[in-house]
Every structure is written in structure tokens, then in C-alpha cells.
Image (cartoon, rainbow, N blue to C red):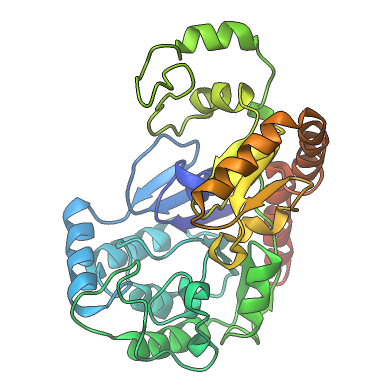
Length: 370
């Protein structure tokens, strides 16, 4: 029996955690044994779980990051514990996802990985692996990461550092560690991110792009009039005399709780930067309203086609946002065409079955090479 080990900050929650869980599920369906090593937010999983460290370790790693800008270089003991588990389960392939998140030591991990003769697949969901500090650099059009990070202008951004700028040292350490793995395949989640990876120190690595997807099997029609009544939207709040129109649902992660809101909506309005939520909306046939600064959105924004899958508004312009929403609400024909396009995109290009199938196909091909 083949064994797959995945490593991510979370499991079965959030965008990356759900992707990890879905890959594990397909591996199990293929007759593999699936393990997921994670840092925090314990949730149920069909895979065997390996917890990396504990809450205290995460807090100490966070403190080390805030004071010394050494994110990814704490959690030494926790990472050594992980490696001992890896030696026991003897995976045939290791699939890495997000290594940032205050839970793992990349130096300890990669010094071990360069000694094992098995395929290593690393999905990049953001730009943290390419830089000496930040996860995204587009907001200031920084290009230092192409050669060498130094004097970082984004120390106040996640993972925030208050006292030191260690970006130059972090960059050099990352470059040395990450490029020392000969059996490494890099998987960006968008064409945009692939272009960045090819300009980074990963340029000589094997690079294969796999777009994120959403699980269309959870999207099902329901009795909408009954649902609205059951949700009891009316008279829940009394803000600006909009009690009949506004309801705060709070944080929702389970698809069964999320689905009713998507299914009774006409638009997904996302004033902030958007990522996997855009594909989530497409799966339900919802046009999206998002701001027009594409370089500030997540990689999934590449699926958005203005006027075909939704509309843009001028960033930080409340009036333009309101006018854009009203225009779409009143244009039923435009929304109908947008709905058809969003569903087509979700079903044919960005559904989870296609995504996971590609991951496991790459894993099988990698195994044949060893």
C-alpha cells in the first residue's frame, strides 16, 4: 500500500485545509494510506492526523516572529517530533502546503528532506516561500525577491515583526534550503503565481500549475422560500432601518451551513481582497462583485472575467461599490448570463475533482521515477 503524507498549517478548515482533506480522501479512495501533519485548528479528518507541536509552541513561535522576524525558524522540538513520525510511517511521497503559520521549522524539515530519496511535492498557495518575509508583495510592487530580499517594507504585514528586519538572512536561508531538494516539484495554484515562481530562485525546479477547485457535490437545490423563513432574517437587526435586508451570520465553515446563504443570494459582494471564495461562489452560480485592484487579490482571482462573471468597483470607493451592486441587482438578464458562465467555469476548469485528480496523477508519475 502506498502512503501519502501531507503537511499544512491546518486540516479540513479554511481553503488550504479543505484542499488537503480532499486530496487525502482521493488518496484513500485509490487504496493509499493518507496522513496529514498539521499545526493547529484540530478538525475531524478521514486521514490519519499528526499534530505538530502544541498551543504553547505556536505562541512561542509567534513571539519569536514578532521580536526577531524569524518566522519559520521556531518550533525546533515540534519539527523533530514530526520527523520521527515521518520515519515511522515511511511515506512514498510527501506533499507540502503552507509552511508558514507558527508551527514548523523549515531548516530542520528541509535538512531532513534533502536526505530522503522520495518525491517531494510543494503546493504554493501564496508567495511566502519566495521571499524573506511577506506572503504577498504586489501591493508595493516590490521586486527584491527576484534577486535578494533586504530592508523589507512589509514588516508590519503578516508575519509581522516589530523589532528586527531579518529579511535578507531569511531569504538566503530559504534559497539554500529549498533549492537543495533535488526531487522537488513546485505546484503554483494559478498562472499568475507560476509566472512569479519562474522568476524566483525556484526557476530551475520542476513547476506544474494546478488550479484550486471547489467541491460541486455539496451544491444542491433547496426550497428557497422555506429556507428564508427558517433563517428568520426578518427583524434580526435594526441598523439604519435595514432590518429586513441585513443579517450577520458570523463565521461559517461547514458547507451545510454555508450552502443556504449562497443558494438564496443573487451576488457575492466581497469588498476586501478575494481568494478561494470566488470559486466557491462560482460553484453556486453567483456573480461576484470585487474591487478592481487585481494585484491585491489571491491567485484564484485569475478566474474572474469582468462583465462576464461579475463586476469590478473602484477600490475604497463606497459609492461606486453601491452603484455596482444596485446595477447588477436590477439587471436580471446580465445576472442570468453571468450565472451560466460562473457555473461553466466551476464545472469544467476549477472543480475539486479535477484538482485532486491532477495532484494524485502527479504523485503517481513521481513515484514511477523512483
